[in-house]
Length: 321
Image (cartoon, rainbow, N blue to C red; front, side):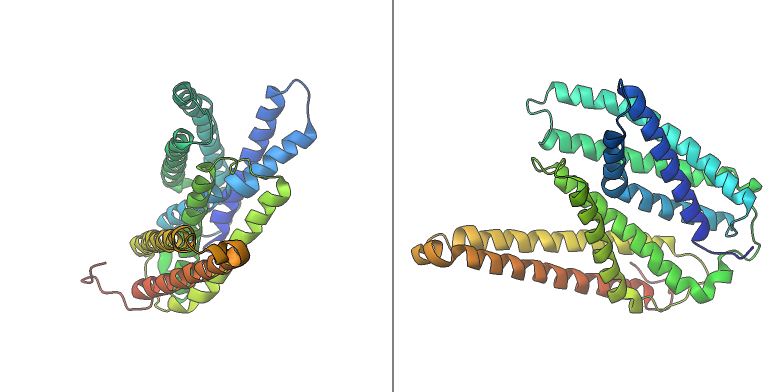
């Protein structure tokens, strides 16, 4: 069977997603006196297209690292069955974590929270539980696959067989990790603002999903020519450092530009009577549009510069990053 670097990670993530959906259907059905297909469908749509996007991206990234460590690239029946077993265990553990640990934490924090949802207390709860989710699922996936590597069909050549394609592999892994971080931050941002977490119907949620795909596609097209160097081994440290730097710097730049924009709007123009009465909202729209364009341009420049630094130059072990 033809080997592929990303086929097995995608199969593992698909199995993880399907098992999660089935378990969610079962749990939702048990919690309600009568089966409401519409309610269950809405719940699944919200979970898959909004909340679980970072989780699935995280699964792809971690499983790819673990399978590469095992030199397993062939989608044989043994490999697929092993990955389904690992996915089942991970899903059950995550389910138990939310049912007992996360539920107890939520009840404890809600006791001292006058507003219940929609404030910094709920944001703190989400940061704790989401971080725990990624840590638990990541560790269990990685070490679960490693612990069962004797059951996998492996190749002796290891990553060296992918040397000619290593620049594309590093590009995809970087995009997966970078998009995961951006989605996770965006979701935390929405839950920190009143009325934004439960912010719409499935059309709105699907729109968010499409927008994230478009953004990821644009970033991919703009940086793909930065991944030019080919490596004989998977540069996990470079991928992680590069993605973390890109996320931190683009976030900081966006925050600074947004603060400057708000200062310009609410401080700079409020003293002008004519602007407030005749052209205020038109100018607001122009300023916000320019602010968004400036954020995008600065973010793209930062990402292109950092990815070029890490992946467009020959490997030098003495270089400090």
